[in-house]
Length: 539
Image (cartoon, rainbow, N blue to C red):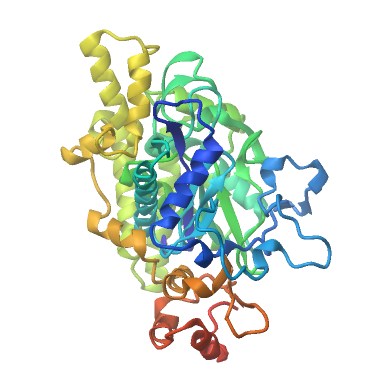
């Protein structure tokens, strides 16, 4: 029994041209990625993203969306560069011997195993695969540093704009951009069980992991404050879309792993958190619930929590700062979001205890810590919410905004409050209100700053991200393309590209390949050594 599973976080960052708010966001995003890539990776050595195994239109409900009927935002499998039938996709063609050093890039694979690229009009950092909630926090925080350094580097280039970056989810004018969590789970779990068990959980977990937002409604048209940045943009219970009719349960069936063994739960309803405890509990509690589903059907206690109107409930929970509003259940009962979360916490705590008694194996430290923190927060949120402001982001932000309101007599529609709400998630430490509180010791931490710095440059050691990141770091000139589940090498004297599959996310680790990498001075010797079956990182 453990919170341990393969997972990761994708974050699209908000951006603004300083002194030029009308600047083209797609161009600025590409300039940020290019500036970071140029710091230590020549253009000719940059690996392309390999789209070969991506299938964004495959639906977990058992069908595939017709490409002609799909919104363009769903076509993430390199829609701008489709290969004619019978030809090799551009992402897998041999690179030219030279490339212009001034080329702008929109996609790089980093030495820490992450992907950094332009997604629509935003720079996005997709973390490497990790296996614990703490590591999810660590490599998510590393992404913040990657983005901050990008903006600093760009500002040093003559003629380039100064770009401010924000780890938030809405521009306050009707646009929302995502923070997506990804969890690998056993494909044997019926998708119907996922919908049943996760819907009430995801709707109500915002009480402890919401990031807080000024304004209500998608355009912030109603004055006020709410718990979640993302909730007002949820419009459906179940669906494939991610940028329109956003669902509580996303059905994209694109595991980036052995499809017969795994499915990837793609969670799009969560907020971008700067508070580490919020991120830690967000992924830790979700991982625990998925463990429960992998070890049996949905418990009756959780099946009885079906909401009468899940979409409406998501909005209601976000607008309920007192945490006392009752949500109607499908069976006619009514419960508050806190009561629903306590029911989940109790079921999982009991399951962990029973598993330990049955097997004689005690839960690991992070599992125990997640359960303890979760139960403690739910108790204090009901009895003394102000005591949770060190750990719960929406409460930390609310405390700052309420202090301004009391001091200066401001209404919720005050432009000063709106500016403060934005400044909260500013990545520039000299501007960030969150950073000010952190430096004052007013916010709890999960990871140390020196560990974050290490994670910026190094991959996790216990997933295939280790092989991906180390290959990029050690052999940048020889990696032609990469993806979550493959690396393609371009060896100078080889007649063809050589694609190394990595369909098992728990192979390609340091334990598995560390010695081999240390003993391979170049990519050719690495590939020769990988011909030994037990050395292959993937299948």
